[in-house]
Amino acid sequence: MSHGLRDLVDEAFLASSRFQQAITHRSAGGRHNERLEFLGDSVLGLVISAYLFEVRPEVDEGGLSRLRASLVKKDSLAELGRNLALGDWLKLGAGELRSGGFRRDSTLADALEAIIGAVFLERGFDSARDFVLALYREKLAALPSVEDLKDPKTRLQEFLQGREHELPSYDVVDVRGKPHNQKFTARCRVPAFDVTTEGEGTSRRKAEQAAARKALEEVMRKVS
Image (cartoon, rainbow, N blue to C red):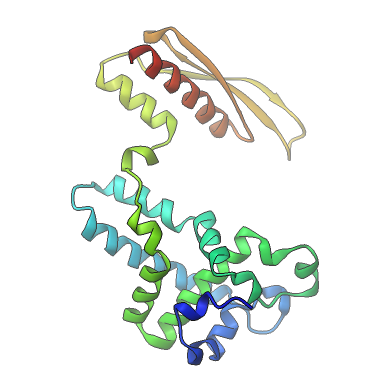
């Protein structure tokens, strides 16, 4: 069993009933971690929000929201869970074990949020804050720029607006596949730079974002 969690919490906490509940997936039956996950999600959001508020005084509300979202999203939590070998601790039902649930992003992320909730209930907010900040130490030391977190459509629009150019237009040019498994192709036109690109995605939004990313790259090459 990994000792990663033991670097962040003590043995008494690991032996507590709340920790045992936090690592119990609903598939295992009995008291599972969904309520603790709900609580932990709120504690995590507050701790990260307060930290960003203090260390990034120059960033506006929208930028702070993007920074927080990048840190508390499921894949970030799952990455942290893997770093702790959290899957080795999880209590899963037989079906979840057979399907590799201990490796699943959503399962790892939910369990980590539940552990945060358990720390809060067992030790109070200060301990929960310390746990979260220790957990996120490396990520907080290497925060991305707010500009890098903007989606391609927003970045392209702001670039064009800043130069008083006509805004891009988007069209869906193809939809393939069955209703539950469709692939969209979107086209982005940037008249001011004579740029037209296409992108694909599993939704219209994702396809437009892919097209915008390519268009932004083309535009930046033209102005460089």
